[in-house]
Image (cartoon, rainbow, N blue to C red):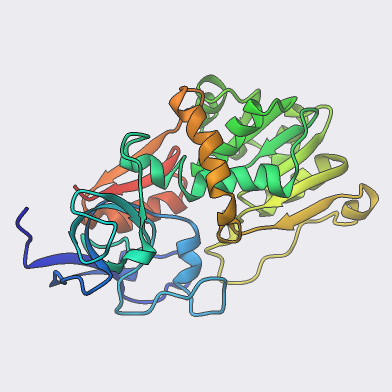
Length: 337
């Protein structure tokens, strides 16, 4: 295929205070590079936007380096190799890498993972078969040690991670799976499409009250994507020796000032609860095991994965902001084709 001389990329224009806005981003046109020895030139097909990217917009120490003003953002993407100077890769290969937010990327072959094009469509490798799926798998089985007798509560249950976590819990025989989401339609989706036993719209009343009604016998496992009021409600509703997988706290990511912690924390002592934070990058060694199990279920049609897709690189900021506002069902993606 003939290559364009230039392509576009999205850069960080300024660091946001509170919620990002359109001014946070800028689009630039740059030359399409050529791969050096050991490198690939990849035409990105689809890219991911993720809550963790909000933290990278701030200039503060974290588990990943912050984005730099005037430089392109990064994030997971799937693309097609169009030129290769690396052994083992050839044009036409489908690869996953982290140089999203741009139409073309030059990267070291060591930073790319070839994908099985017969297993699933490209989008799936950024959702159910990507970091969100592995996050759900890790949180349930490595962090909480899910048991078949457990009642499981998942917050943000209609999102990329939560929707998979709930389904995996059901597939592993959890006694009852409950989800929270931000609209009545999402609640319907959880129970009718994804197989949750119960779900509630957290905007319709106090979370602790709705959770208590959905879990009259209490909960044993809480998969936390939201933090704040949801975490407090889960602690109050947990049975003795309950376990919490602390995956995210999206309710607080755009707060300018630090938020107070949950009330009633002595219940962590009286109920002998365990809460553990985790980051999926520490658990990539589980990827082969995860792919064997979840990939098999996907082939068998036993896992449903929803996507919300915006089209064109110009829509990437809108996709990110929409994801932060909870406008997506399932994985939020940007199709660059």
